[in-house]
Image (cartoon, rainbow, N blue to C red):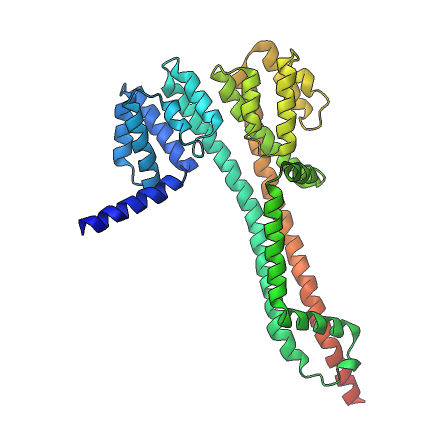
Length: 363
C-alpha cells in the first residue's frame, strides 16, 4: 500500500511540476510574504510558513523548491528564474532590484496590486470575448438542428420539388448539404482553427493580425486602452524599482501582447538609449494619445513618476470597463437581429409554398 502511495505521490508531483503558478496564487504569495516580512520574520521562515499552509499541490511544490534553494543561500529572484513560466521577467527584475535594498516587503504589495489589476483587465477581456462567442455558438447550434432535423421533416410534405419557390429550393439545398456532409463542415472548422493556430506562432502573422485589429474602430480603441493601461502600470513599478528606463521599456514590450506595440516600444527604447526623451519620441504617434504623451512629459520634467503615470493607468482601467460594458450591450441586439433574420428566412421559405398550396386548393 505504501508503494502505491509513493507512486501516486510521484505522479502528482510530476504533473504539478508541469503546471505553472496562477496569478491569484502569486498575489496571495506576495501578500503573505509581505505581511510576514513586515512582522520581521525572515525570508526562509516566511516561505516555510506559507508552504506548510498551502493546499494547492502546484504552489506547494514550487514553494518547497524555493525553500530548499533559499536554505542554500540563494536569492528569491534566483529561485523565481527557475520557474520562468510562472514568474515573468518583469517580476523577477523588480524582486532582484529590491533585494539589494533589503526593502522587499514594500515592493511585494505593489507587485500584488499590479497583478490583481492586470488580471482583472484580462478577465474582463476574456468575458467580453467569450460571451458573444458563446451566444453565437448557441445560435449556430440552433440553426444546425433546425436545418438537419426540423426543416427536412417539414419539406417532406411537398411532393413536386421543381414547383417550389426559389427560396424554398435554396433552403432545401442548404439543408441537404448539412445533413449529408455535416462531417465536411466540422472538418473545415477544425482545419481553419489549426491553420490559425499555426499562423499565430509566426511573428509576421502576429504583426499582421494585430495591425488588422486597428482597422476595426471600436475594437481598436478597446485594444489600445488595454495596452496603455498595462504599459503604464508595469512601467511605473519597473522604474520605481530603480531599473533603467531602457531596460524597463524592453521588459514592458513583452507584456503588452500586441506585436505592433511591442515593436514600437522597442524602437522607443532605442530612441531613449540614443538620448531622445520619451515624450519627444512618442509625439504625433497615433499609438499613444496626446494626453498620455503630455503626462509622460510632466513626469520627465518633475520626476514625479508614481502620481503621474499611475493616474494614466487608473484612467484607462475605467475606460476599459466602460468600453467593454458598452460593447456587450451593443452586441446583444446585433446577435438577436441576426438570429431573427435567419429564422424569418426559414419560416418564409417553408410558409411560401404552403400558402401557395392553400391558394390552389381554395381556387
